[in-house]
Length: 491
Image (cartoon, rainbow, N blue to C red):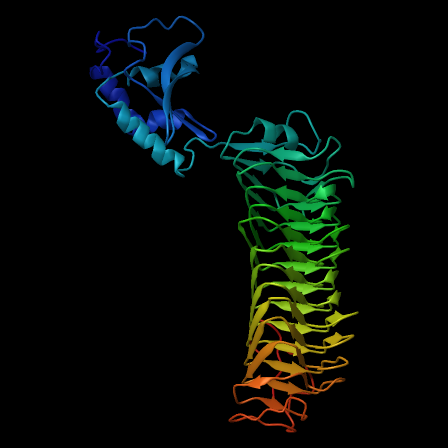
């Protein structure tokens, strides 16, 4: 770099102004970007830096910088490699007040993304060494993206892959890349409050003696276009979530929770689990729910998803102890001792969804069982051919309050209340109950809000528009695609 135009007092000279113009970025922004590292922002303290005419004869030159956080600012030495000297030389002016730099750093700490994120490529399917996924994760800086130049299967022989930084892992597709735990270890452990995105991979044959066979998440995790298959753990065969989890366009099959809950996913965190456009099949749990389990106080949302042939002790499809919203989803052929489709101990809202051929093999609620202080709201949903060993082939309300509106119950069976069994407070409006194979359409006291139809006298509807002992005229072909988000029945 030429010294022409450089001022002896360390301020910008004419040549420096031209170099600044070429950078096309404000000085503070550019320097901050260079020194952004993981969770910490480092900014140059220009009032304490060496003068511009300092000799650059050594391999590295120590510059004085400031560590900026919302609560403190203290000196910190940063070793700058020679190739960055020309950048730092331009900004050795005291004209910009340190407070402005710290203010900018605070903004960066508040959530601005890193400006120098890199893309790293995995070049082989080895478990370790140069080009391996394990080594690439270790080499990555916070905010980097990992992609793959290979397909096939990565078999983990040296234990789980720990992610302790913000990171994006973009696989070539779930059908092209498999990461196996070799039935001996977990695949990914997101070990702290990091933001991680994983897409386009299959996670299989992973195992943990504790939480999360496939992934153990303590941060903010987004999973997209991925498959979890044949994973197992004591709790959460596919994923255990202690943070925030978003799953989209993904498949969970044949995963198991060997001791507790959530063959596919178990949620025990303070964040929200959101599942969209995903499929859960043949997942199982020794206790709790077969596919997804939510602990007390958790929040979960399930949208446009399918649950089939999952099994558990409470909730073959989903077990909820917190707040669960289910929209445009299908539950079919799931089974559990109690609550074949869903078991609810919290607050459950179901909209535009279909429950068919689910079974409560020991107790109640072939489609949905609610108990304790649980409340349920069901709207625009269909319950067909569900069964329970005890009460409520379609739904049983053993909780505080249940409301059913604009819904259809057909062909369900139980000892008592083939369609609906109630032991709490249950209101029904604009709902059709018919063709119960055993136990009649209703059991217990049902509060009608009007315009309900039952093809037997077990519901005893008496409000405006109610009809008892009236044929429903449902299509004998049963469930069909009638244009909605799930299969329904037409009259």
